[in-house]
Length: 258
Image (cartoon, rainbow, N blue to C red):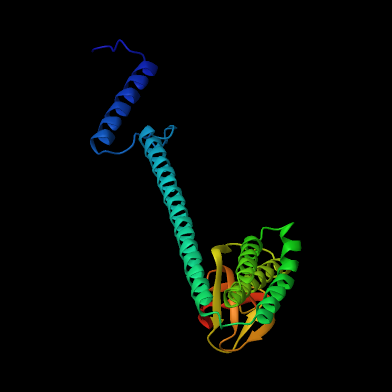
């Protein structure tokens, strides 16, 4: 009879070790994670491969966000350049109109030109007072137009002076309306301002509301053809003011470019 050199406890440990090794080999061959056999799940740290994949995903998300920010910055630069170019063209067209009126010299009388300039000055005063505390680019533009009107008036181009005075008056009204609308209603979440105020008109009867949505109270009503000015938007709602200085929000389908 052969006597084992191992005691009962040592034999038990040896058998358990061999069993665990065999179990691990089968799991590795099957491509499964190593878990403790005999119903015991081994405690393990997160797999390094999963951590690396997560880090790569985060890096890719940050890179995509940076690319989107860069594209938006380029878009803003492009839009600003377009606005500046359009402003130059507008100034050139205005000068051409004034020169044409100087040649005709029959479009307005001295009294009409003087009256128009006075009305523009009156319309500009409230905007000048407000622009001391709020940004009002319309005030500077209207002031420049009034100086040009005065120069044309001194040269007896009364038609050109009246034309420039009316332009200044319209700018002053638009600026006053914009600031009045902002004083009555605070900025809304997601509100995006236009680069410059946009001349609009109502395409039909509709309501202007105190907020961007049909649940907001009605501020006033408009009729087809009414002149409006747009300043910003939230989704399909446009923040506007009218010629009377009233402000509010109107649904996009109720307005068009003027």
